[in-house]
Length: 324
Image (tube, rainbow, N blue to C red; front, side, top):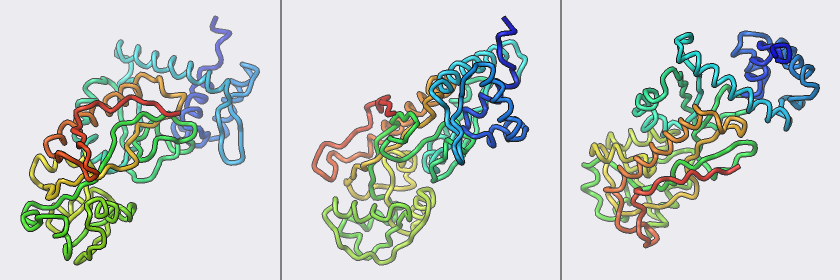
């Protein structure tokens, strides 16, 4: 039986290359050279008598057979790692690398991360906070939390939550604002990556065209909310992620106007990894985390949104709808 198995070191190299879709990233992980990874992958391909990767000009892609083989190899490695953890032979069962947009990472993932790790003994999680979309073909990541419409070629996406925007500011400033028209002359804090956010909200509130006193531009949601909390001006916050600051009364919603966004937050991973137990656990935890965010946001939601429809209360669970 053992003679029919491919070399285990070659299997390890194939697994790393398939996860990263990069011989270079696999080499970094295994402390080898890219040529050594390529050589070991060829050993597997010669053993099987078929190609596992399509070698393109500047990238590699799994063939259909390669995807099927990787799914089986990854499950086997996960099972071996978990069994090793149970008998105390390894310090951790698995490493997971998650890339998340900074707002989600800072306000929800990091503050609640201990509960997830307690449910996954032996798992080691690396969280990268970045506004850019990580490249699954080149970056050493296993999953990501992305903002968008949920359709990315070659990836599986599960919706975490719908989003909306609402105006927030420090309590002292809120006392001066009776209606959206009172924003005239105020300092408006903008997010540089979403230049149309304020005009869109003002149109929905029926006060399009007002003149701000000053405008401040920042490049992250975290900076924008910090500026508002310090009393610099008025900002647009993301619903439901703003719930903790509203609950602590660090910020308030001066107007009952919530404008739905046309994009949401999604959990994204490679199709070949979608059934990995650790990734499924991470996905389910993030879905539940966003459900709790919506629940915590519910008391602050207005009776109606800007379109006159009943506001979403956040009590529903975000659907586990996969887009491939």
